[in-house]
Image (cartoon, rainbow over all chains, first blue to last red; front, side):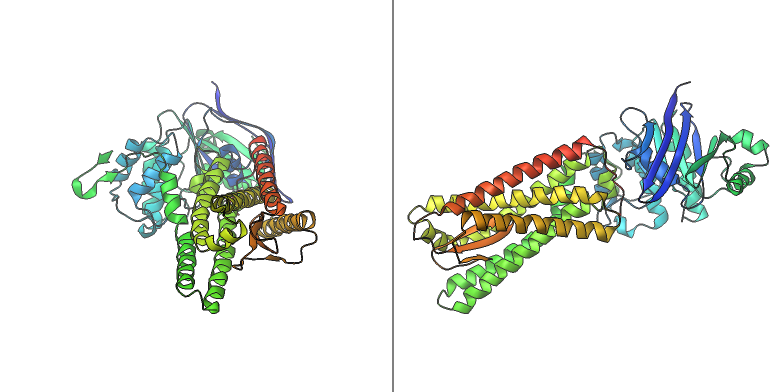
Length: 228
Length: 268
């Protein structure tokens, strides 16, 4: 099975800090949802940003699908003074690959009004809009940086539902999060980074057999050595 | 494309240039205020040409507005190029440098409008400097300023891009400020020492006396007083040529750098 993402000996230095240290990761093209775990500052965001092409200076090689990936950053990216429909228009102008009909159907399904100002949307609503737009790019590889952080459990469930129903069929989604509990059902694979190094990449079923996802991630982070 | 009930229609038909419409709405207020202030000060001074104080107020308004818009223009480009503060644009499928070119062109167009408003009040001065050749005066006024804007924006883009290699938000901004200042001051000194070494009245700013010629060292306005009426001094053409050379060199170097290597586009 070919790989949808190949990262070979990736090293990224941000100033004097080594954010990623000789990371090698291969994701097979089997339409998985991959959880990327690690503590704050472990290198999760740097890994996603490098694959997305935002970090340009690095050692090693990164091979992503032709045409690029869809990336959801960990910060709001819509203009506060635009309405939602104007935001979709702007995104369509900036992203050649945006499926506008798909985006509108999803936003309507979420009960969002086109004349809602971005500045007036709640954090949870905004996360839904961000995710809906990024998924509507329908890329073969989608990277989501902490989409579940700082939203209440209700919105977290909605975001997970959105991810399950609206992602491109057969596409791979790499989701970074520092939350572990209650997410076993979402992921097919688990990747753990610690201090800029990749310390675990395994199938969730295998990890679950070894004591459960949460327990295993905690063990690996406590150990800090590469175990798989 | 319109989806939904009439009350909740999603007006999302993709339009080419949506980014630039949004960008224009975002950029317009600052030059608009500068144009209004410059125009009002010029109109009042023209209505009462005998009141010297009004002429001084007009010159102050022009100086402050141009200083303000020059710094604002650099700020817009630095925010996009160095500080990377617009994730939506950064996530787009367009290269960052192409968006930077678009922003620079839009700023240049807005500042040219500001220049036209400023120049209307200076036609009398230009006429005196260029004798009966009013067309030449207008051409000089237009081309000299456009070349100076091109030189300035190209230098800002180049220095702002190099400043992305500097760690820290404040350090990067300071690098741009110092770098651009060094280029502009060096440019002015070169123009002065080569083009008008024996001229004592070669000052910064704007002037409305007769027999003055407006020059630009990069974006910096200079006034040369002293050439005979109707004589276009060689330094005027040197100023124009230097700005054109700086604009071409800086923009070519910047484009080669921006396209030729990978840059970190991390928000600061």
